[in-house]
Amino acid sequence: MMVHSSVSSVVNNPIATEFLASCRLTVDAELDRLIPKESESPQRVHSAIRWSVFAGGKRFRPALLMAVGQTFGAPPDHLLRTACALEMIHTYSLIHDDLPSMDNDDLRRGRATCHVKFDEATAILAGDALQALAFQTIAEDEELAPALRIRLVAEVARASGVPEGMVAGQALDLEAESRDVKGDELETIHHQKTGALIRAAARCGAMIAGANEPELEAITAYATNLGLLFQITDDLLDVTATAEDLGKTPGKDARAQKATFPAVHGIEVTRQRIALAHRTSHEAIARLVCPTGKLSMIADFILERKA
Amino acid sequence: MMVHSSVSSVVNNPIATEFLASCRLTVDAELDRLIPKESESPQRVHSAIRWSVFAGGKRFRPALLMAVGQTFGAPPDHLLRTACALEMIHTYSLIHDDLPSMDNDDLRRGRATCHVKFDEATAILAGDALQALAFQTIAEDEELAPALRIRLVAEVARASGVPEGMVAGQALDLEAESRDVKGDELETIHHQKTGALIRAAARCGAMIAGANEPELEAITAYATNLGLLFQITDDLLDVTATAEDLGKTPGKDARAQKATFPAVHGIEVTRQRIALAHRTSHEAIARLVCPTGKLSMIADFILERKA
Image 1 (tube, rainbow over the protein chains, first blue to last red):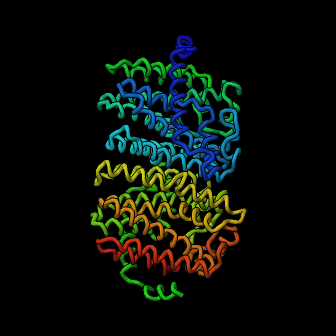
Image 2: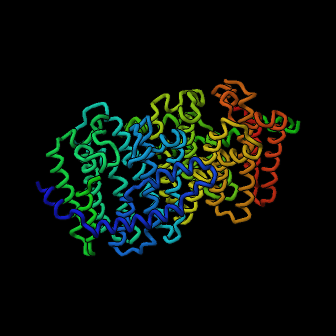
Image 3: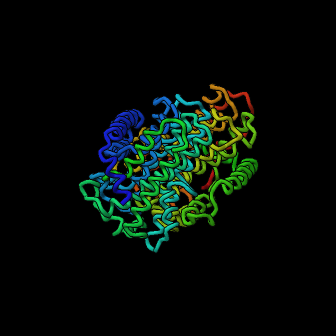
């Protein structure tokens, strides 16, 4: 109930749509500069990287990083490369997650996944190369002081790996496929698998802007709830959305016996948890003195999204 | 002829053996500290990482980094973490290269490869996590100034990825399996697949020690030839060594139609190329004013190795 009233108040928010579209243009242009051309050797891997990076992603993590950075007054030029690095990590994780031995997905964003379009070996290498390129991109970002770059590399590396980052979350998710998962286990999976990188994106934006410790804590709380909001709405869309909206077959999670919020808690509790995460993300930034319109807007956008 | 006389002069060099054994002890202890315990969640991935990292590797890249660093006067404490990071990158590449869709190897260093002992998904994730941990390890190395750490992250990332690093070399190697490879293509594959990380190990050691530009150039030339020496002796051992020495089945390259030096050039030309790479690596460091005994010793050790 609460969710639906919130949704209706922000549906078709033109400012959010415009901000995300503008971030996407800037990020896509920079990714095109950073990633080797298809004509360059080894061509097959470069083609595979570009196939997956330029597959129509929403660039949510880069947009979040840029929104947080701009909130604390960072110049856009200082945010762009780290935003691209986050998208590289995200894309490598999608390529590897889609592999036959992992989630075995043939379709992503309405087109063939990397290993289907190319082959498994090429998909594994494309993901590996993107991870290296992400860290290289931050390390070589001459807009930023070396001490800051090092904090960013450490932040992104911790969020990507084990024991509490994205890879750990994917490992827990795979382990959970064959058995019953309790509610708190499910939140741990979400917290690591999707949450860690979303949190890192927000925190990197704040670090680049030179946010102080209380500000960084507020942003961490905001992004933790935003990550949960993102993943639970994703789970719910898999149950309720149409194939056309999603660009992939809905209901796939249920068939794969994935641990999802609707599967563990039912639709009604899922909607309540979404409303709580949305409200808590707003509360986390209420303490900040800088104008937080962009951050509120992003939380509302996640809540109302159709895909 | 030349090769055999060189070999006989260095066979069973006790100083080289002792140096490598001592590096290995220090590196193994530090890797044990840096890598999450098997008891920590997600346990299966942590077990898989440890299975592959502690599989009896020679720690050649760490030893090279430490030898170069010590040659230019760096304290061992400054070299240790980056040495471990190089070994993490190397191990992740072995885990991924062994996968069924890549080289499809069941056995490495005399025991089951990671995906055979665990499963493919776990092996992919173990490799992904190791790559992230490598960059995290350098970024969080508080012995080193931030500006130096950033140079090291950039160096290792470039050496690991595309368009000219380790992943690029593995991609070219896979592409080459089904067709005839020319001599210069083969050198490019070796230069990237094995050479890039060996070169990075040596260069990182020199950078940590604060070597100047001419010194760094000499080390780069030394390590480029050392990498070639390493890979070509590896190719030759696959033809001439016994299974017991290798800890794996010899002749595997030939059956997989791998592009190797003996396959492309024959045994005699391969032996000549080995002698040339060995001599050139020595010549590259002849210009240095610091005592280069350790570096000569490593080149000799690679030349004489049996596995």
